[in-house]
Length: 409
Image (cartoon, rainbow, N blue to C red; front, side, top):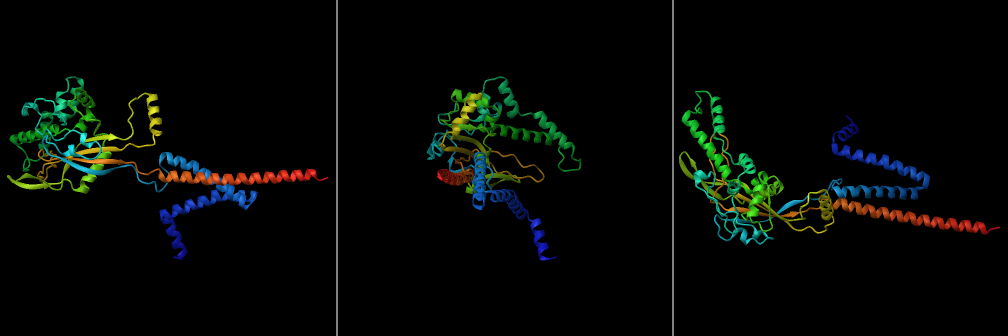
């Protein structure tokens, strides 16, 4: 195969080279044909100026679209993101420290998230009764839900997140056990089925007991509003983000936790062959997410309210600092049984609550489109002004010529 064929084959295979050649050819054919037509009719210099003025005028209009929507440029700059600032640890109990000693923004105004760690659910087993949270303490989500007034709203929320259906659990265990052959050592007898059901019920109750406020806000925002009105949930200007609305902040916090190794040295114990052994875990679960700052949120959902909110925020040149606080807790280390599903995460009630403080970085995604728009507009105006000055000079010469010809006998 000749060298020319190899080059052509390489160009045909490489998508980058083919793409660049396609763009270059399109520009040469489309722009070049217009420039050639203008040059043959107006002359080289004037035709080039008109062609360039049209090109940069079009670039200014297109750049404005890119600027508004943040698209169109290969290098678009950095997207908005959450930037890690600091992490604060709240030890179990209501002792001062942790968030109260935070030095970032108004983070110190957030209530203590680690005051109450005693089991709550189910109340008939734990003997729990509702008491208002202490001043400066964050209430437990399951406690608020249990104290919420009876009615259809509570029934719906309880049915969704705080119900233990023992009959359904037993039916699932029995159906799975029936699929196992009798000679399989994993086959359970009646006592084994009862023990398995009791264990799964206990796991479900433990999961309900560690329900978070952010999860409750996603399913039952009415409970959060009621708790705020009753004074049980005092956030001092902070907003509780539902778990459905905090995905980006939570993902950033998880990356920062892994990067800073905040849970790498949390120790605990687990039972192996009937004996307790020391163990360490780096696993954690996200608890609650709070936000404060940024541009004002819309409070009027009417058509005019939406329009005015859009205009007002678009005309706002300053961007108030936007903070997010994502709280996480360590989980108890658990042994993985061969062939069994991973054990569910259980919060280590003796571990501190780690609050990850982040600040919103708005990025510079529209910087390059903005520079392209402004630069193209300036070049277009300069070329247009040059063409206008040239036309004025031609008009003056035409007038002088006509005046001189009129005065000649």
